[in-house]
Length: 257
Image 1 (cartoon, rainbow, N blue to C red):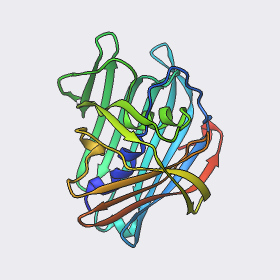
Image 2: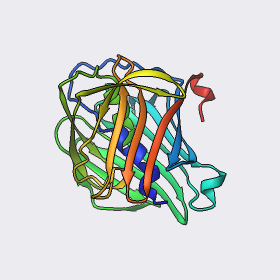
Image 3: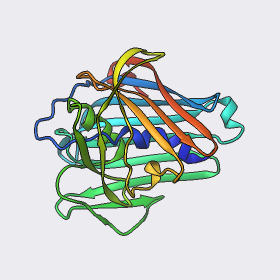
């Protein structure tokens, strides 16, 4: 099972983004969204998105979000994953301030940091402290993949609109676009939802956004103001990949992992 299958979930979640000057967060600290991950007919693990709290980062208030991926005992026999991402995003949700990722996937072990210099409009990627050359950032809002999920959730979805946004993984910064047209009622373990079914266009961004040329990706966000990401489905050469929302939890920020 390839790494891209497990991370397809995160990469497509962050694609439904619109440029907007008036953002009103519809999430609050302590929210935790849990997803079951499935490959073909097998359940292979889970993923979790969490809102920690507003914290201070270099003198600026910032939202702290996290994303976890963990394979179960069945999948561990083939490809064990224990990966966590933490990101700090400006209070207005327009800029990532700092991103870190502890990646443990099979034999791969990476400790990634992406730092941002917004005066110079640059992002710098580092793994185990070894830095790459800075990448230039475009004007306007630019976020990492996890922060972008919450930026989109703060914009009410409008049928018939095409949404665009710049996303960076620290190696590239790419504009991504997608149309919102198809409405669909779906049932997952977390409940019944009215959703927009979206087929994103991932452009040239690699990493968590990468998909093979013969793959197809669909995602479902609720069509209400909460704009929950409830399902992701990908078709690739080796089978189908699913991520389904199983639980919406509310805790104190101190209780989150």
